[in-house]
Length: 210
Image 1 (tube, one colour):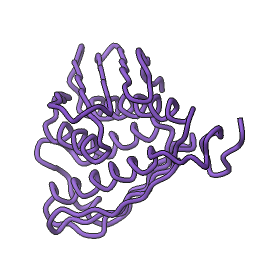
Image 2 (cartoon, helix red, strand yellow):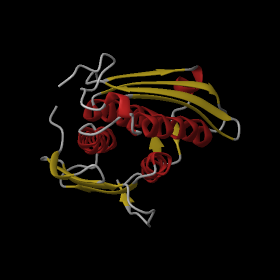
Image 3 (cartoon, one colour):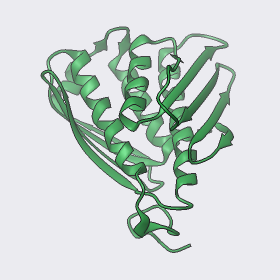
Image 4 (cartoon, helix red, strand yellow):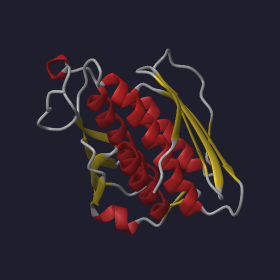
């Protein structure tokens, strides 16, 4: 599945676009001073989760999904994940030219919801979701939980990352999924943090010298 076209990429700002028969998507991310952002996928809760990733990564994310054919929530979620992941990958690769991390892990909560996320950016896109609450919840606000799964799957694909999220507790669907996305954003922030010891190496556990 094709990723996004990267129109601009620095270690501080990325512009990514993807145009298909079904949609047009534009994503802009930057690590400048926090500002008011605009996220519009057509799914309010998905907007909130993308915003949550941005907040936890200390990134501004502007995102616009325009439907050009049928409005299919599965397509919206998966394609949005692919584009955001591709944009993040482009920024990660720019950061790799100097110093970078590779992996990150975080445990996060919101009220009764608690989740742990582990991320490794090594070009091995896989998503693992664990915990009974994930399968028990069918709808969160206006978004299907299966579509949130699709978004995360697309994110892993676009970013080239292995993502494992474990739900520890949760009763309110909103809190359960927000705990998951908070933990994911924090884990991604760790993976993007400078790591001078790895300067001049490729991404991956071995860190092969270029």
